[in-house]
Image (tube, rainbow, N blue to C red):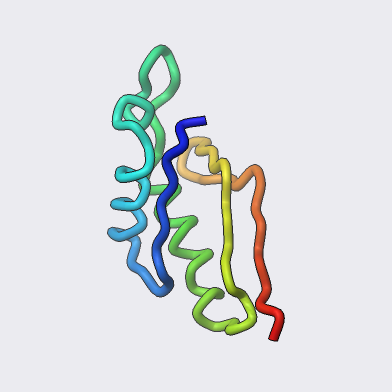
Length: 88
């Protein structure tokens, strides 16, 4: 919808995941514009970080796409996820 995407190479730290979120999403959305609850950026960052670890450990995983991610209290749920394996 926003046509804004971001990429990071694994491994990355939670702080880098936070930067990715802030670079990709509009600050108004993160802050909770128009009656929408404020996003829990830390919960999303922790989820991205936990997904990045297996990417390091499994060389067959070429790419992972989580979109969208929704937050509920202190957790994050990936509504749709795609894991791309290498052909080798």
